[in-house]
Image (tube, rainbow, N blue to C red):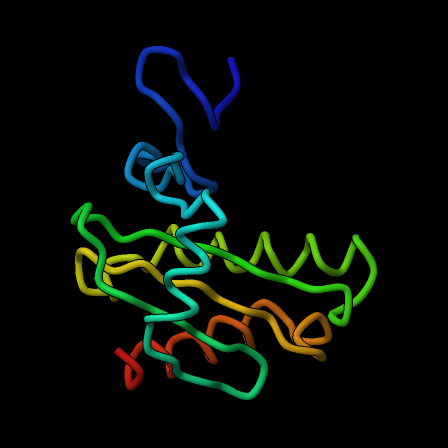
Length: 133
């Protein structure tokens, strides 16, 4: 039987410790999905800029922390855009508790964000979430 996954005990991390992946899922209710919601956040929300990202946020009526991502073709080809989106979702999954509850956040990737490494993106987000909200 595989050492990283046992049907009886659930998933395990690389050190063999049991982990609960249920808290880290990004469900439909965790995402901003409608274009009308994006437009409302862009029109009424507050803004904070970091060197490679623009953060727009607004208090929602749902009471959940929700994420929206916008990555234009200026960032790069489809591979680069998808890589940036995966990193943004990954950061949100692991650090959503840094946001106040009941906030919708739209993250807009600026040109040059695809050249950053994962660690650089996460550090930039830590600084932004530490002072922007």
